[in-house]
Image (cartoon, rainbow, N blue to C red; front, side):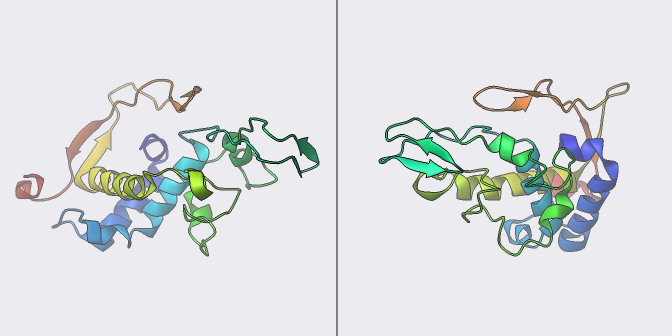
Length: 191
């Protein structure tokens, strides 16, 4: 939400898609979610630029191996630094910029279940996040509902702060405050 409020032209693209798919006389329903391709790209780009877990759950190889020229002894604790991969200009063009369009022409490489090692917001393999199916649907549904139902305005004099606080999980260093205003034409849609 913060990235979209900071970039109104992208917020307008999401609202246009929601209007086209859902309509202004309806509320978002689960059946709409699979048709919201631009919103899906926004969510994927958000997970890339602001990964909730910058370091994936540690791995411990059962046998010694060599990866990328590095010897990894058996029993070592290995952390996969996804934040570093997501910010690597050799992997991502303009990695520090919020560009949802990079996920629009996806040929399946960036779904959450693939073994594309450049994009693993929920991990992979046997240790993939067990909450992935719920998280994927709920994030899309919640964001679609909030954007479709309301116009969001920052409090007067407020600016978006996109700085993050690093820890086991990454979060915004300052909470986002935004004021919702009715967007849909009929009050009964809010009941």
